[in-house]
Length: 425
Ligand code: AMP
Image (cartoon, rainbow, N blue to C red; front, top):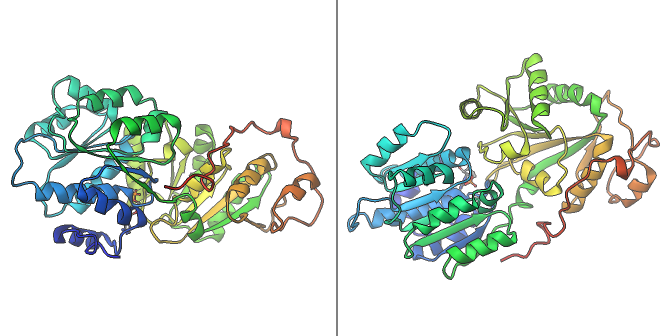
């Protein structure tokens, strides 16, 4: 399959070639024809699957085709995204794909002065990419009208609801024309999402891509058992023994992210922590530094990491394992994007063995356990060993200590959210 087979016009296919896209990803192959035909689309897909291009390409192509007979100077396509980072990335994708099309797009988000944004809006734009809060602000002040919107995309809808944007989204939707085409993208489908989709979409085509298992297959995964107190020393050893080009390191807390960052800097590795306590400026600067390779390592919490999109991330390191097993799959999906291969290394302390067990249950194959020379970790108890999958090479030596189930941190229940059990469209 090629982009030409999908009837994408030459200026766009050329731009895609320049970006190095050789063929459409599954979500692009599935969604583009329907969006070009004019259907609404309900897509379950995550960042990392190529979903931005799946909606950006048809929007650009249709707006380009309709340019001659456009009746108003208003905004023709609206893309809503939950965070500034994601909105900026989407805007950058539009910039990349629209070279030579003479369509104007812009991105608006909060936390920065609105004046440059309103100045650009006044000049007139075709495509607006926005976070809900700032959009609503500017709508209320009369800077944005949505009555000429022909295409509406709600991206990462589940995350938007999770962040408390439901009331804002509803107010925005109320101002959209009824006659429009809508694309709705979400990674998970809790009940509120289903209800929101039902209220927004008209006879939608359902598209599902299985992103959660897909990245894992091309990711070389391993786990090291390590005492909690030895993790920082082990991290240093990983940096000494592995060819690490760029790494995203996950910690459970913001404080932990700061601590790991300081340790890395101490041993001469350029690292920045990225989390909710950092200012918008600091986060943008960190991401930019990471993209242009002046920063080698980002240390992030799960929430902060979701918007991070970097091509060819060589390593993901789980300094701490997540308590929700699906999060592991999301994390490692940050490496090995779009056909590349990548490495995911996890550290597992005694008190995280329960989390590891849950993660292994979710995966088609247990993560390979490796040993780091010079590090000895306590082994799990015999009872737990029996429950584990047979392939696991635990073995030598008897356990020293393992915290009882009551002493382990409580894990949120994930019943019903196993991506491998989820109904496919
Ligand atoms: P997204 O899921 O939209 O965030 O895209 C994930 C990554 O895949 C981005 O870095 C895109 O530049 C890249 N990408 C999207 N489509 C393709 C494609 N057809 N071929 C290669 N890379 C792609």
